[in-house]
Image (cartoon, rainbow, N blue to C red; front, top):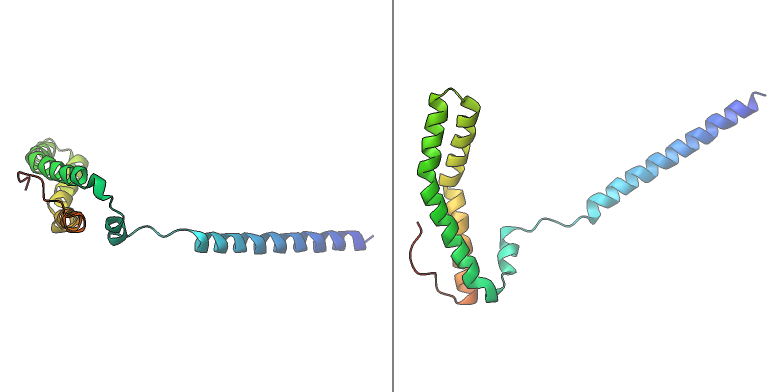
Length: 129
């Protein structure tokens, strides 16, 4: 009668080890089978030149929206800080900092110049910066 509980323990142990080993292999397989996120260079390499003017116009529009929106964001941040809404003021300050950052503007400029160079398309007329 002691053989049956021992056999049950052995079977449960074998099943548990099997499940754990398959689970670990599944996780390891999923980690290596995933696709890498595209880097900015590969994203720019896949630019469709037929849409180059649209993309350049959109970049110029975004730059214009940023330039027009920064004073509004700054005023809203000051108003929130004056009213004692520190969380809102901090969030607006982080957004203002990100939009003014050289990294952000350089990324837009780099994308525009790469599209212009690859597709031989002139920059849209007018300046947004």
